[in-house]
Length: 120
Image (cartoon, rainbow, N blue to C red; front, side, top):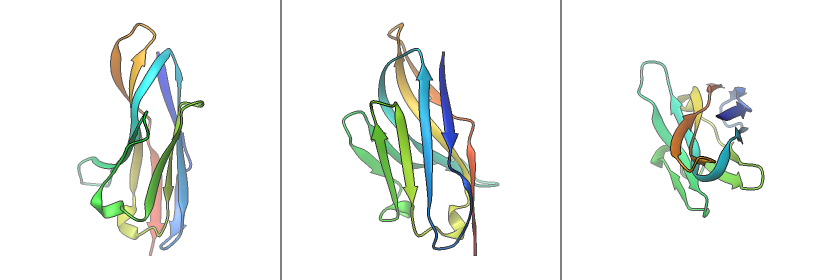
């Protein structure tokens, strides 16, 4: 079994910053991709940013230049540094990881979600 544990959400004023963390643990052989998605009320879940094990990153256009995704392979952890936050960034943020388990089978895992609220 693999678990993803997120932390770092909260309430912040517009223009402020938050840093999210997501740590993977359990029966992990390797991690191919980790990243962040978000879902606002009444909207579909959308990509925010991802990072591969090789360090390649991908961002949604709406967060480019404001958010930075990074990873620590030694800790199986992915981070999302969010700067210049806007009210429209308010959402539940979910960590996603594509992991090869010790049984050499690839699965996609999701975290439980962490609320980010940006006040105007």
